[in-house]
Image (cartoon, rainbow, N blue to C red; front, side, top):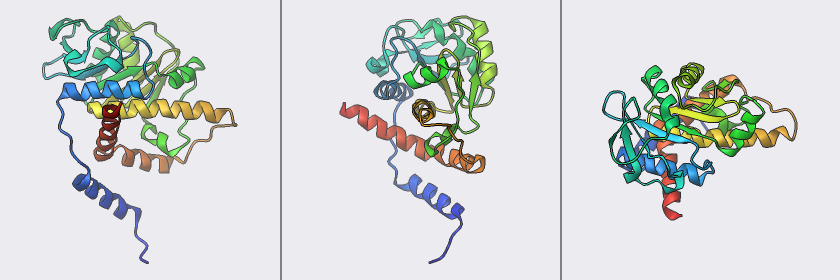
Length: 251
């Protein structure tokens, strides 16, 4: 049997995924609503804490779930478009005041088109102990060298200074753990932000559980970097998101 280089299989899998994985066409608000339901399904609900946003076509504006609803209740009609002063310009209702810090992330990161912030339980446990993430297992690798850590809590993020602090700490990474607070993911598209958010909570759960058995051991940096790039391929991210959408539809 011929021994082939790993790149051959990577290229082949990528090509075949583009060909065979179904493509689901959704509007941005439909995708946001599904992302909310996925977050609820995977245990991210914490009352009205947490937010989801996506850039709109209007400069300095974004879509977000109207304040007062939980992730499990979200429908596409529940999303409103707000401007840089959080004034509602499309739809009915108000934005969660804590989405103000999203403005600073969007301003600093033109590559970011969707932000998810949650107080998911295992991330919250890790953050109560002020412990940064250790990439110790394959499923964590989408976050390898892509998850920042803010060790000091700047307070409830309803003003501008919190946005300055969080956006600076995030830097060019796709995710950040916020001590005494929760998590944030910054995706190039909604599905990526949701994918990272779900896997960040899983990673935190794994680390909390593994720490009871002894020292949590990081995986090889070179292999983690390779896995990071592979598992963040758009075909894998969107295929996973579509699977979660089907799960939501069966609930």
